[in-house]
Amino acid sequence: MKKGSTLIELILVVAMLIILGAMNLPLVSRMLYRNKATVVVEQVVAFARKAQTYAMGRKNNDVWGICIVSNKLRLYQNNCNSPTMKDDYDFGAEVTASDMNLVFDFKGQTTTNSIVVHSQTEDITVNISDIGVVNVQK
Image 1 (cartoon, one colour):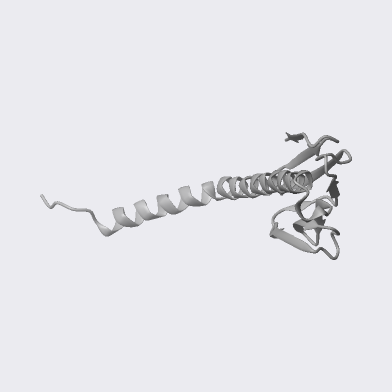
Image 2 (cartoon, helix red, strand yellow; image 1 turned 90 degrees about the vertical axis):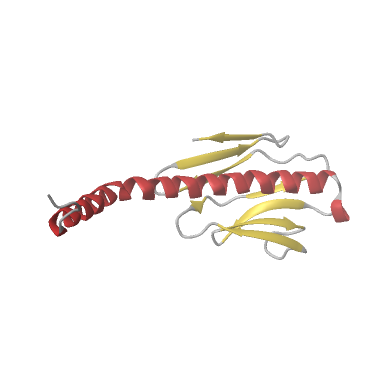
């Protein structure tokens, strides 16, 4: 008796692995889209908290806020379109977000606002109340 595997057995195993991999491809891509949307939502919440903290701390005695500019989330000082200081986060092509401009006053308050993050698999709404409380709804 010979020990080992034949070429046909090896080809069958490789073919089965390729078929299993191809079956899982849609699941993996859906998971990646969902993960990207979650990361964008987390960045929206982080930028909102940062803007609120800067406004309450009266950093540079200016207005602080967050806005959407050409598929980028922007933390800004003074004005969204021509900021004194800015920090941009690029969503990438897989995720989009609704337009918004959220400005915090020195008390950390804002007008009630929401932002909707869209991906191919889901829409996530981030609601920010007038006192800065964040609520995420899937």
